Image (tube, rainbow, N blue to C red):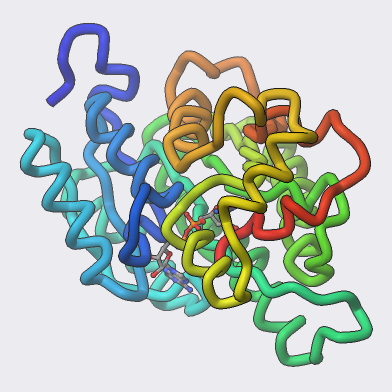
Amino acid sequence: MAEPGRGRVAGKVAIVTGAGQVPGPGVGTGKATALLLARHGAAVVLVDNTPDRAEVTRKEIEQAGGRAVVVAGDVTVAADCERFTQAALDAFGRLDILVNNVGVSRPGSVLDTAEDTWDDLLRINLKSVYQVSRFAIPAMAATGGGSIVNISSIGALRAIGFAAYSAAKGGMISLSQEMAAAHGPLGVRVNVVVPGSVRTPRTQGAAERLGQDLGEIQKTAASVLPLGAVTHGTGWDVGYAALFFASDESSWISGQVLATDGGASVTLPAVAGLRLGGGR
Ligand SMILES: NC(=O)c1ccc[n+]([C@@H]2O[C@H](COP(=O)([O-])OP(=O)(O)OC[C@H]3O[C@@H](n4cnc5c(N)ncnc54)[C@H](O)[C@@H]3O)[C@@H](O)[C@H]2O)c1
C-alpha cells in the first residue's frame, strides 16, 4: 500500500483509538487518521467500543492493500487499554505510534453540568490518555521510542460553551507536556492536534439533534474564520496533522500543539457558530 513518496510511516505500527465513526456523510478524525497511516505504510490497530464501526475502517484499509486489525474495547477501562498494546505486539510485533483520538462532548457551563456528566467527560476525554499511554509507553520504549498524538479541541484554547469538555481537552495539553518531558529520554515524543469545528459525521448528527442548521453554522463560521470563506475543515485535516506528528518528519518536535482550525484560534472572540466543535 505504501506507494513511492507515500511511505511516511512505512514499517511502523500504530494504535488509533476511536478508529470507527458514526454512520453518516464525511469522515471522522480517527478513521481519517487510520486510513492515512495505513496509506503511508503503517500497520494499524483500530480500537473502538463499537467494533462494527472500526470494521468499516479495516475493510477500507485492506481493500487498499494495507494492514489493520480491529480491537473492541473502551478507553475508560484499564484492562481494555492494556489489551490495545498487547494486540499491537501480538499482531505486528512492536508499537511505534499511538493516536489518542476518542473524545465525547456535552455543552454546558459549570452551573448546568451535572456532577456525573463532569466525571464522565473527564474520564473519557482525559483520563483515557493516561490510561492508554501507560501501557503504550513501555512498549514503544522497548524498540527505541515512538510518537503519541493526542487529539484535543479548540475548546482547550477558547471558550466554546462546553465547560467539562474544554477542561478535559485543556488538561490534555498539560498532560502532553508532562509526558513529553518525562518520556522524551525513552525516545517517546508527545504532541497535540487541536481541531477547530470540523465537519464529521458526528458533528452533522449533533447539529440535527440540537435542531441546528449545520449550513447556517458553517456560514457563521465562514464569516469569522480566516480560512472559513474558502474551505471547511474535515477529518482529513486532522488526520494529516496527526500523520505529521506520527512520522519521523517531526522527530525533533515534542510537547507541541498544532491547531488545525482554519485560523479559529487567532480570531477573537469564540463564536457561537463554532459550538459544535468536539463531536457528539
Ligand atoms: N468533530 C469536530 O468538530 C471536533 C472538533 C474538535 C475536536 N474533535 C475531537 O476529535 C475526536 C474525534 O471526533 P469525531 O467526531 O471524529 O469522532 P466520533 O465521535 O465519531 O468518534 C469516533 C469513534 O470513537 C468511538 N468511541 C467513542 N467512545 C469510545 C470509548 N470510550 N472507547 C473506545 N471508542 C470510543 C466511537 O464508537 C466512534 O466510532 C474527538 O477527540 C473529538 O473531541 C472533534
